[in-house]
View 1 (tube, helix red, strand yellow):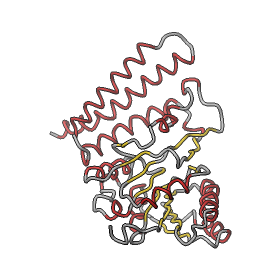
View 2: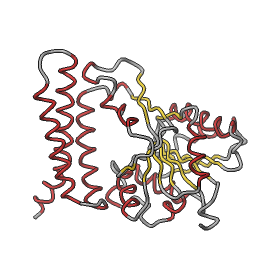
View 3: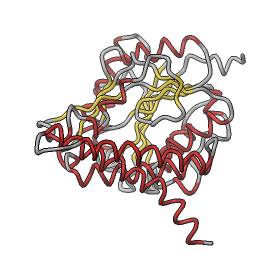
Length: 311
């Protein structure tokens, strides 16, 4: 293993767009963990502002003055689209650095940095994805159960599980992954969604493993505007379509796997719909789970339908 591959340098990248309040809460948490672990010489922060007006700069400047012992870089990626912001983070990374992507609406748990740092020090090459648990300012709707539509079940994977793909909300990537040509968002995904699925699928396809690790926990604040059936169904459809697009582009199995996934979603949706009865919250949750599965199935198959229309 080369010295660059065995580096103990890390950049934590936060891609943001007009979420100054989130940054103002997140950055001090990250800074405190870096300082608390005595890792100022090893870790720096990178804020990628995906607003051409640079709206996050005053917030970043204030935070930087409050934590002058930690290096923090700020860049503007004027081209709108999360894929552009991800690629900018990749290009701003220094040779040999590891990279963590963390979202601007998330907060790290108390053991977050120490857990990822322990993985980094092992020197293995690959990707490690941590759990993200939603938090709410208000009660969730009865049909939302304990928060399943917003990701509460993402933390249920067994520690050490191998993942097919992963999101960029709480992920550690090694230098070998980051240096590979597959670690770039391609043109058709620059405006999102699905840019994270595309890149992690591509890296997995060339041999890098994505491992779920339960210790570096994070929370994600769910805005009240997302607590609607309309938002959940639209998100499920878009997620299915983005996954199908990424799978057909970079995944193993291509469209055949997409069709199988759509059939599975349709079957589970039918089961939920048939199991629901009466006006209770449990029945309403089952009906909503069924509708969500059907929305994902439609999203998965929409790409295939588009392809047929072009023939």
